[in-house]
Length: 308
Image 1 (cartoon, rainbow, N blue to C red):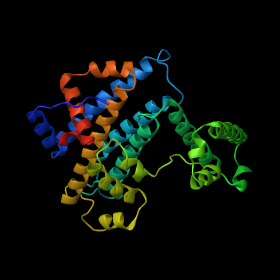
Image 2 (cartoon, helix red, strand yellow):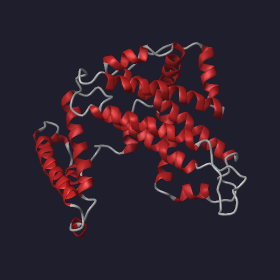
Image 3 (cartoon, rainbow, N blue to C red):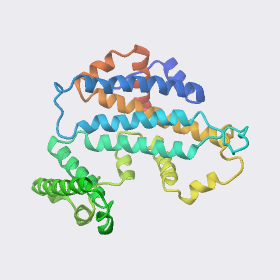
């Protein structure tokens, strides 16, 4: 992790105030995503010389997921009008529900990166976590089709499923040979056998134990989770004639809060990726000084270091 810095008071105040303004907030996130893109590109530019450990290719994949979801949120923030066959609405609407769902996905992508890669565990324990994460993914695809469906799917898809079933068996063998296998409890073992277990802890537990500051992220994450599952609390927010209007006060608040979270997760992700490889560290150092300061400030803020 990056060393704690004493940021100039002017910078801190400017950044904190900027996220209270929608336009400035989006401009900041656009600046951050450009930097993130450059740092991810450094991984591509240094292959195959960059020696990735088993599974580390997914650092790039999960980083891209954060980046693309962020760009989608920026597009959604522009709003839209609803149309019939005869006329278009004069009102601009905001799909804050989708913005919240995407923000949740961004948080969970970072928590996955931290769970698998951005931690102080030994390489052996990281590898064990990666193995059971892969098993869960393969098992999920096996369950896409029941016996009746399998009679209808194309032969090449069936061959892929059969191949992945063999992969599951090979991975399970490695998991059982690991010294960490004995630490799995009965519930873990049952889940691993039935349908896989991508994480040994729940999302809430991962967030509680994360490098992210709980006071900043825990309540928003719970809210975004309700939207993802269409729970009643989220439908209350959607129920009303004016609730989707882009300029409604509640919608402006939803958007401002989501943009703040998205900005911080991107900045923490950049710093952790920067610290992971020499090529990404070099790419970060080549950024404009003002961009680096902004990223470091929001990364430290997201980790609660502004309190120290």
